[in-house]
Image (cartoon, rainbow, N blue to C red; front, top):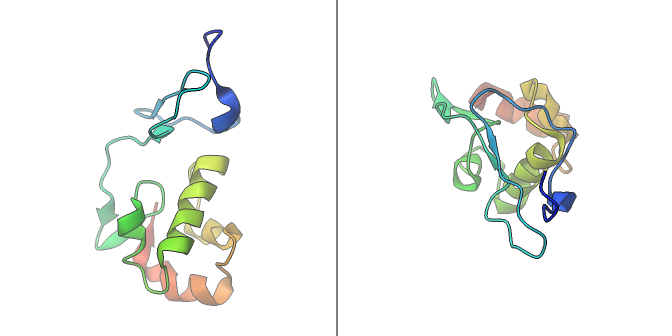
Length: 108
């Protein structure tokens, strides 16, 4: 890191994946987007990728509006990539009932 790097907006414990780019803004600089995921299909077999989907793509899932989609992205940015689709239950507001509705539409 450089002396003027602002690490307050990133999770230093996140696991990096080959092809991922992590942009660390300078102090007092507004970050555009912290993490760039590897170029991989966002949808696979008509499923939405928890690790790559945009806000709009997450909102296509049943029962996921803007608020829950934002929480999924915030969780991903805070804790790193999802390791299993069931991990979505750790996102605030998504419990087992919602997971049961979503699981057939999700991929990593």
